[in-house]
Image (cartoon, rainbow, N blue to C red; front, side, top):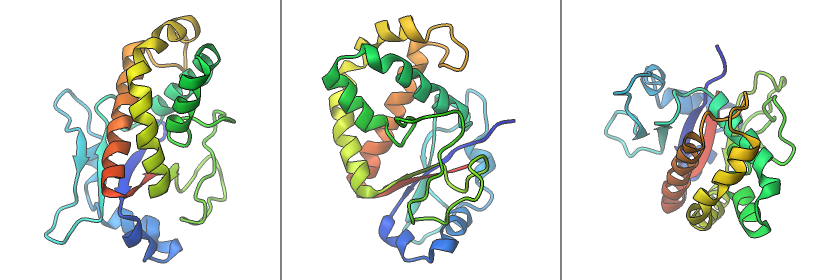
Length: 205
């Protein structure tokens, strides 16, 4: 069994009001008993944004990806695919796609192990193989990614040739170009909604 990714959209003002050492716990408490449902598989699995139960105004939500079952590996594979095909893409599209995917599923120095993230928002993990946090995207960074996504989306189909050359049939890459694009479109939905609210993103294992 591999690592999972639970992706939160978070009201940053509310999160910042909690002490750094208690922020992960606060996110987990906001979703008691819900994580099993988020990662349930099957064709009828709910996808999209899910909000915690209760009457109080929600300060966080969880996104359940349709194109994965909650596992972290599909995001790693998609990031590796972008690393493979980006040298074949024209500079304008490459730069804006780097801006969109950077810190979400890809980093310039991406390796098989997850990067140590936190940036002072969360306590640092002592072991990069067992991180406390997989992804932190501040609201201002989310806004930039939403703008980048608007520029990337019209060019997605143009990546098919590069994908066929560098990724099709290779282990550790998305099974098909359609799978790759579907995951990117879901990330586009995620950043667009978070940017609309002025919220940030947090990914927990």
